[in-house]
Amino acid sequence: MTEHNFFASVERFIANATPHLPLPDGLAERITQCNSTYTVRFGVKLRGRIHSFEGWRSVHSEHIEPAKGGIRYAPDATMDEVEALAALMSLKCALVNVPFGGSKGALRINPADWSEDELERITRRFTQELARRDLIHPGRNVPAPDMGTGEREMAWIADEYRKMGRSDAINVNACVTGKPVSRGGIEGRIEATGRGVQYAIRAYLDHPDMPPVAGQKSIAGLSVVVQGFGNVGYHAAKFLAEDGARITGIVEYDAAIFDPAGLDVEAIAQHRRENGTIGGFAGAQSLPSHEGLTHMAADILIPAAREAAITEQNCDAMRYELIVEAANGPITAGAEARLLAQGVCILPDLYVNAGGVVVSYFEWVKNITHLPFGLMEKRQKLSAGVSMINALEQVAGRTLAEDLRHEIARETQEIDLVRSGLEEIMARAFNEIAAHSVSTAGNLRTAAYAVSIARIADYYRAIGL
Image (tube, rainbow, N blue to C red; front, side):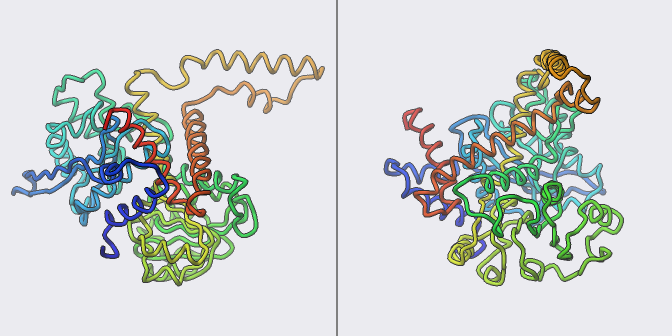
């Protein structure tokens, strides 16, 4: 196994977990393998000539359908990476008990090389290739955004799928998640993975059996370095700062900035919008990107960029108590072994970044049921709030303050339900991980894999495999 063979790392993590489970011979191997991987090659006429593109859609497991997983656009995408990410999706969905199998897709392309109109034509053509093979389908395979894609691309995919005139037209909006709210999306999907990172850290610190970080069991005051300032990294930093953490460092592909007193996340986001980089942010120390992860100590590191950011070559120079894997596979198997030996605690990716697929599940349910969240109980809850205000005022013998009256009788919005559901699912999942960690010598990744594999094995047993 090479240091950066992503799928081999996933296989190793699965192998570490299976001895802790009573599995029949051969079942662990069956769970490890991807069911199928499709390579698609197609041409699009652009700029006066035919340009050829290559992409993949891997289906790791269909023990539950639909299979679920994002589509990424990246110039260095590979089939190995796609298969590893598909396997992680199966495990991730099983861990948080979301009824999806695992899938993943990628198109080898640099979005920056193409105009918006050209990207739309490429995306629609890619959609046709996948949909013909039922690799986009509300009940079979449901993509979502990933690196290099977002709401815009998901809207194009959904629209092209609709135009293809599939027999499942009534559920066409459910063919993909991560859409704009105006096109059948859901409030909170953009922030979902970053919000899940926040809830994962809360769940860890709230659990009575988990050790404190920097001697404390709350986020407030902890120092945090975030690697990657894209959608996930930005939202994770923003929400942790709201919880009182000090964001002391941000590391991007082209620069790294540090301030022990804490960085202003929103000001940095604005600086990047204006300058195209986080480098040169006023009041912060700027360094080359490759020095970012080892420059200064912090209580928590959140790798939120690409796979294999932390390897055996750089892990020994890092000084963090807790590493929270917001990205997929940011720590190689070899590096993890060394970090654990040094006493570093690692919250694993298949748990930490599950917020995206959880909220995608909420969106898919909304699309399948054709019923907005909160509609049925909205008036009932409002009436209950008014009744509570009246009862409190009668007991107190005075009128409650206006802000308190407003809070009690406040209408529940879709975003409130999404955040509440996500936090509950993240808390439940961590409790299961913590319970299993007793038998895995405190290794949270092995415990998380054990929970996931056991749940998938139960599904296979139920269908007679």
